[in-house]
Image 1 (cartoon, helix red, strand yellow):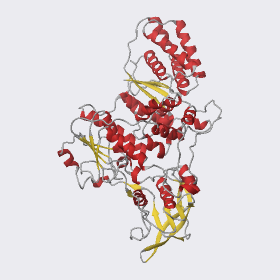
Image 2: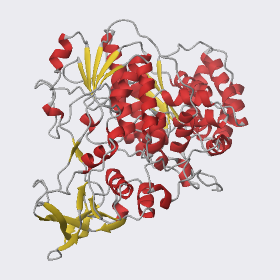
Image 3: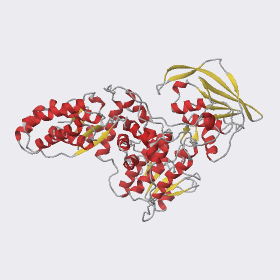
Image 4: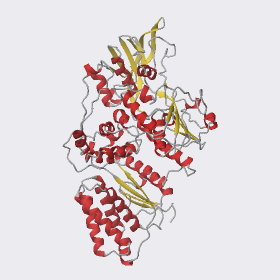
Length: 628
């Protein structure tokens, strides 16, 4: 059967078109929670169903009777059939049990797994009856497997969230930590500052409130024991440019594989934007330093105050004996406002990235009574909240849309308002007002919302003749950052029109097989957790490269990548539960106290509270099996 004549056995129950095209070339058939798609008529449907049931059994948590007993027996029956020992009676029993598992299981793994097997038994009944009648063993196929969930699909690093939440639920904190660190090497950092896309995707949110996934990650990380330093033999084989999250993650996972690396960092401290772009009240410096210490304990060496492209070039690194280079420079330059006077060098004007960096190093970069911060993202929130802490009494945030369109974390918006920040919306800056080179005010134009733009938000449009001036002492634009990696890498390394690296999104390898890249220099300004994911993928690819193996992802990774995309696109069905619980919310320092210093705002949670919150997880696992 050709690819043009695709057979769908037990058609994908949502929409077959949502299956990514990459599955067609990589697999001969795929079975998942939505059905079965077959592109090669040599695939044995019975054996594929047996393998799917086996994988479902392996992932069963054992906490409810239908899945723990029922799916295990279904798996045994399918094994009997494939061994040539099946009977009609046992086949009917498998059908009854699969139906019961689908209807009665407590978590989504049992429900979706039971339904998938039931669908195959019904749609392919003739094939199963023929296998029972033949009384002949069926050869086992070669399979790839993927275990996904909506929260995992939303996480840029693909962290197995249900796994670590489940281990926490049963008080296995050490195992929970192991599950987190498989894909998140800086859980104490991410547990404090992640933007929580996983919680937006959490299916518990359609019942009552999402599981407090970030809070649980922080609890696990703060409960970890210290690790013993490792001494890796030989010379460093990999050079990493940048000690930000992507570079640290790459070094961490290389160290786990026994590969020694050297990180070159331009700043005097590690962490990148996590260190100089996120204030201590959100991410205490000692927490970040401890996580960097764990990377160093795995054998990585960090050389600070070393500027790539100035103190050392890529060619020099290869001449020094490094076999591969991972470029992980961050987006440390501020985007322009397009406002008259922003390049005049006025006293009292400072881009947000520079403003936060100066504060991170213990300085008070701007002084006065009134400060205006332009922007609506998390960096803007960090700027206004930091402004309150360094002595500004009148802090205004200017945003060209309404508060509802602000991309910042909702918690940051709420806490900024609690701290006395005034939100001035539907305004855009047009001209800086200055006297004798000193900022005195900002001319703005009022805006109104028009039709949605590419982001899905309504486009801000100027209201003609609505200009007005806001008096102020200081102005801090925080409308985004830009990357300039094109100024650092050799000309043979491809760079996009956005001045970001061109690398394979799965392997992070560039056109030069020795050079890999990831983080903000690949995606543009993005989240810390996305940078960690890029660093891990790069480390896996670099390890294969150093070992002389194929750098392409293995079948399991390809299947997972494709099925996570399916989960993202699927419309979720309503859950048959009634909401009765509330999300765990850590204690927060009162605003009148917290604006006096940069001490951490959010407090820890107890082990008992963390365990109760973990119990709210619906364990929405989905399983897919691909025939290689």
